[in-house]
Image (cartoon, rainbow, N blue to C red; front, side):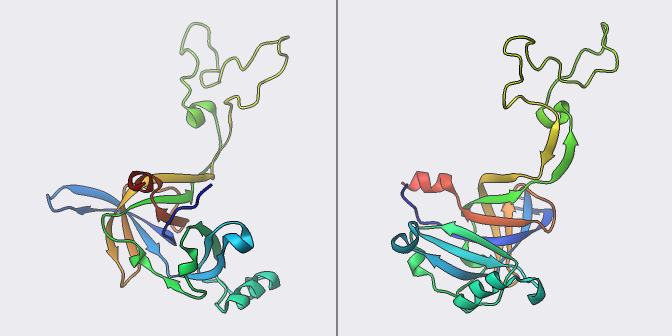
Length: 219
């Protein structure tokens, strides 16, 4: 698989608000504390088999850093950080160890993909988890209105197929929202305003990278 050129940064979701555009229309935006991130490792096709940049983000107490992780940061000559995420990009060789990336890595109007972990909903039934209609509200249905109904035959095949939509754990999974627009960049406070909603709770970790769709259009 050919690696394309991509930009990226790690950040924290601060919450949502709204701003007005030049036509006085309300634009819902998510405020993201983007960076500063530090380049902790560079990977090359010759040594690692692929080209990537490892980004470190977030403060962490030294006593919470294990010795192997501390050695990894010491080798790069940077202070330990809480999060480490790789960004695959063809121009990884243009970065330098210890280089600091801030919110101005993106410009207003650019398109980005936002990756995060969705809010955990706990154990949920099929109506909430999968959007099932539920059983009839009348005609003999008794205390089973929100149940899934039949999940398979009896003797043949005599089991439930894998992937059957049933009740269970909902949320708390990796989610990527594609092709969101960067509405505003505040480099002084390292803030990015992205149009629309992004996955995860407040103070959740996010990764912003160049939009896959925009790269396909350019290609």
